[in-house]
Length: 196
Image (cartoon, rainbow, N blue to C red; front, side):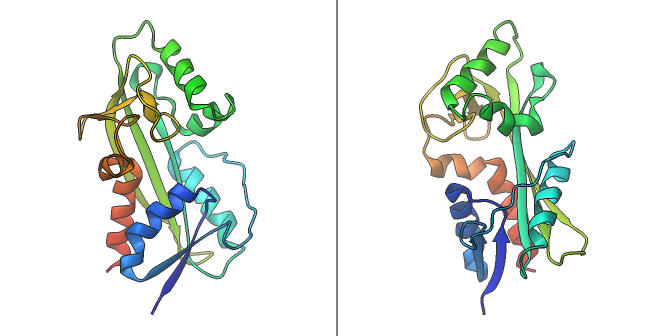
């Protein structure tokens, strides 16, 4: 028997990633786009966890099924973990143009020797509207490159080098990236919980 979950996103890449991981467990994943729901709460939290909960809570009021929401970002050590929870907003300030966003980050790092950075993802699962939220987190460690490399991926991928698979996210395939991605790690933890 299928089990339904609603994902708080209209991002087709994100939806595909969740479906690939959770479909084998018998879950049907709906996006907000699938259900013609337009919900975009203000993310006023100070952590990925808080923002994921804000998104999950606002959507859970509108649907009859459990809800998944996630929040993610990139933290750059030499910039006091900037942009962090503001990663999406920082990119939006450049019209979501990955090249302009990447160039702005490289400019901020031009006098820095420490290039360490990590992608973070926190998933919030809200099974009932008033149930206790459950969280699943993933981290992908690496560093910021000296220059933009490749055009694969999106967001900050073209300036990120992963320590775990020793690949630049801007030049590797989506399959290679997903093997070590922060979201994949968080989804694996979620899938483990859902399979119990």
